[in-house]
Length: 163
Image 1: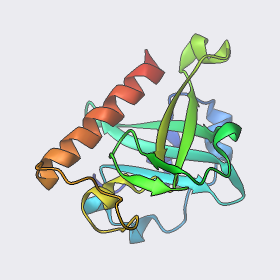
Image 2: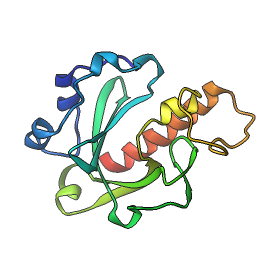
Image 3: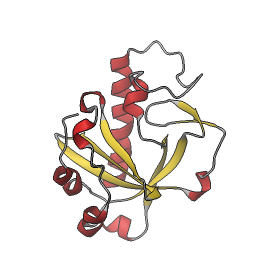
Image 4: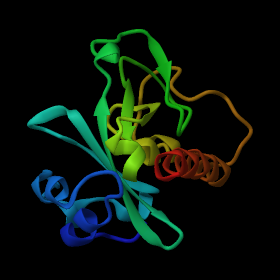
């Protein structure tokens, strides 16, 4: 993924208001991020841990999604699998819910998916971050194929939000 500026990040959100995008806390260390290893940029708000955000390049431009952790998944300690990168964690997967874009979102419609709580899917797939013993299933896929699968899963999730 190409490096993004704070302005590009804030203007990319499709499921929140401009005011909400202006108020969100964007990490200050954008230049220190491993952009070459990221398929999407995801982060949690350290002052509001139930809020998460991700920005992915879709059709050549950044698309941002505002997410919230489901309270039902809080404190979960059983092993769960991320629906994007297929990494399993003990307590490291959260049900993240995104309001749909547009009128449907204003009516309260949302889409949810189980994702790595730290949104570091790209790093887990590449082996740059370790989720612990048994976190990666034995697969015959190459890293490139795992990256493609993660991107396909993410694209499908974002398409449900923007539909």
